[in-house]
Amino acid sequence: MVAVDFSAFMDELATVSGRAILPFFRTALMAENKALGDKFDPVTEADRAAEAAMRQLIRRQFPQHGICGEEFGDERTDADYVWVLDPIDGTRAFISGLPLWGTLIGLTHRSTPVYGLMHQPFTGERFYGGGRKAGYKGPMGARTLKTRRCASLAEATLSTTSPSLFSEDERPRYERVERETRLVRYGYDCYAYCMVAAGHIDLVIEAGLKPYDIVALVPIIEGAGGIVTNWEGGSPAAGGTVIAAGDPRIHEAALRLLSA
Image (cartoon, rainbow, N blue to C red):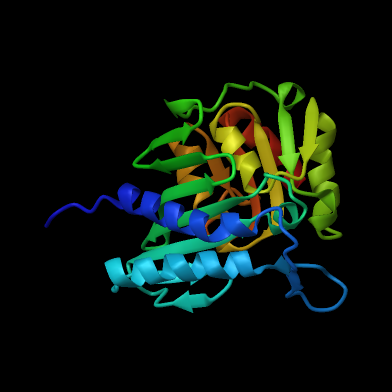
C-alpha cells in the first residue's frame, strides 16, 4: 500500500480555504448570529465559503473519509479517518479586523488526532504537526517548533480566550490557576495554542470547546513537545474543557488546581 502524504494535502486545503477567506477580511462583512437566546456566536460568508471549498477537495481526494465541520455538520464520522474543520477559529476577531484567527484543519485516525494544521492566511503563517513532529512556515522562513521549559506556574504565561466563557462552576477553578501565574493574556483563540508550540506561551486553559476547536491543535502541540488533555487528564479530542501546556510540570500543577 502506498503511503499517503496527508501533510501535502493539508497544505492544499489551507491554500484553498485561505483564498476563499481573504477577500472578506477587513471588509464590510455582515455576521449572522447562530446562537440561541442572548448569546452571540457569529458566522460569516467567509466561514461557509472556506469550509465548502475544503469539503469539496476532501470528497474528491478521499471519498471514503469522514468530515466533521463547524458550519456544515458531520459526514461518515464512523470512518477510520475523519477530517475535522474549523474554517475560521476566532470569528469574533475576524469580524473585528484583528489577525488573531486561523483555519484549523485536523485529521483523526480511529478518533485519535494524528495530523493538524493552523493557517493564518493574512499573516502568511502555517503551524503544523504530525508523527510527533511540528513545524512552522511563514514570512521569516521555516523552522521546527519546540515548546519551552517552565518549571512552575509562578514563571508561566497563561492564555484563555475570555474568562466570561467559563461556566459558573468552571470559572473559580480556572481563576485558581490564573492567580498562580506570572502573566495572563486574553483573546487569542487558536493562535494561543500555536504560541505554546512555538515556545512563547506556557499554558492555555479553556472550556466549552467543540472537536473542531481543538483536534487540529493537538498534533501541533504534542509534536513540539507539549501536552494537551481535558481537565480530568484524558483525551481532549471530544472538546469540552481543555488544558494545553508546553511543560508537563505546569500541566500537572494546573490540573491539581483545576480539580481541587
